[in-house]
Image 1 (cartoon, one colour):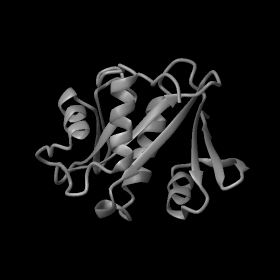
Image 2 (cartoon, one colour):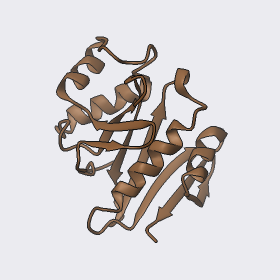
Image 3 (cartoon, one colour):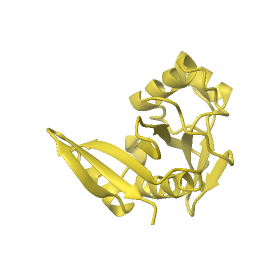
Length: 166
């Protein structure tokens, strides 16, 4: 992972979700283990804690990060996170995502991945969004396939999927 992708606006709305940038209070709470009002009981997950550390260590700050908290519109609950990183390849952004177990199986990861990938293509010079998944995780493979990503390459137990601007 290298430089985070900067996105604007601070919120992306889908039919059922809001993808909002991390606030300083979110980052502090995740790093210290504090609970914030409105978080799902199992949020943050391990991946969310890793992202919070990366954002703080990179001094990306919540406003300049390509990472967002996934919030369910109906309940307002924070249910996961999703983000974009620049890869070493020019014009390619890497997508990462995770939804907490209590909210999986509802299509939220696909909805969030579709929205953030579409938003990524609004940035100048971005032509591809890439995501790597463990082939032993068929649910994540299905998320990418449903979001329109195609298998690009397989290396051992990992598969890279890509979505290219039409």
